[in-house]
Amino acid sequence: MSETVKTSLLFLFVGVLILLEGSTNFLFFSGSWNSALVILNMGLVSAIMAIGVNLQWGFAGLFNVGIMGFVALGGLAVVLVSTTPTPGAWSQGGVGIIMALSMGAMTLVAAVATMRMMPAGKLRIAVLLAVLILGFVVYRAIFDPAVAGVEAINPALEGNLGGLGLPVLLAWPAGGLLAAGVAWLIGKTALGLRSDYLAIATLGIAEIIISVLKNEDWLSRGVKNVVGLPRPLPYEVDLQNDAAFVAKAADYGLDPVLASTLYVKLGYSLLFTVVLLALLWMAQMALKSPWGRMMRAIRDNEVAAEAMGKDVTRRHLQIFILGSAICGIAGAMMTTLDSQLTPGTYNPLRFTFLIWVMVIVGGSGNNFGAVLGGLLIWFLWIKVEPMGILLIETLTAGMADTNALKVHLLESASHMRLLTMGLILLLVLRFSPRGLIPER
Image (cartoon, rainbow, N blue to C red; front, side, top):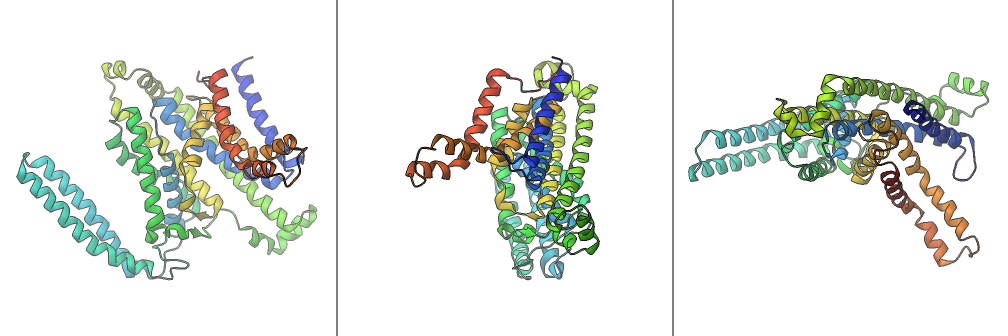
């Protein structure tokens, strides 16, 4: 069987699973098009994340375990770009926050300049400590009252600076730019590390990013969340109150509530598919270009590539920024889909481990494999729990409903996700070590 036919059949298989989810109420399928579209939309977003990770790992061999942080930065971009400015926030403390952050940045610059310009010795250490301590004191003196002023503004609903009030679709590329900027800062310091140390560094930095989002209410409202974000499509309740839409739904024999949810989810599916296809096309063009061949040469043998005059560190930085930017775009898309930013929901299991499973199962180094892995693994991640309940009910059919073992197993069905993901990973690594669609 040719690779093209095999790839087509695998994508057809995933498409059939999603169609069965929407049309069939049998076994673990729900028979709900709402459920099918929810799975499809998050599968498309996950596929975009997988493309970003595949660029870093499949093209360059960079082991990034901080995917969660870049996805969260994409979500933050939606708040900063699309929400309206909080009335009075800038006059109450916004300007002071910017001044304090600038002061902090200047302190770091001064510290670096001190290290470079002064000769080693006790005097340099004393000057460095003086710069850092003075800078920190001034920073806190400006920052703390400014933050208190902003967070005191209607804290139940606002308490943050807000955003620029721009169209939400502009937040998607902005999410990529924000993630790319942070990736540049990380890459300049961490890409010189060995692969295992790079993984630890990126994981730690991702946790720092999430911690900032959870605790800096002036920026992202912390764990109070930012809800009711602008959307590129109308809210369902607005459609249900639109007489023309209700009449149109009635013409098709649909309930307005069902019609509005299907309309919005289908709209997102189309938007996400366009973005996915555009990024997939660009990734394929990059893979086939001289730049892509050079990246794979560096991945396979850094020493030989460096001996041929290639700047390995610079190329690693490029691919790290590109992959992180794609994850940032996906994070912005996901936050737009949810219509809210919830920093407490970002966790390494969902936004790092699962994305790596998608890349490995789909086929590291193959962009189509990354997309397939994103769609397939996300479908299984969602449907494994009802599969587990069905399996447990079948195996315990002879037990009473009040049996302690049966009750415990049914309550633990959600844990089948972790078991299943591990099992899938082991089976793929055993029987198809290069993934379902291997690199060619």
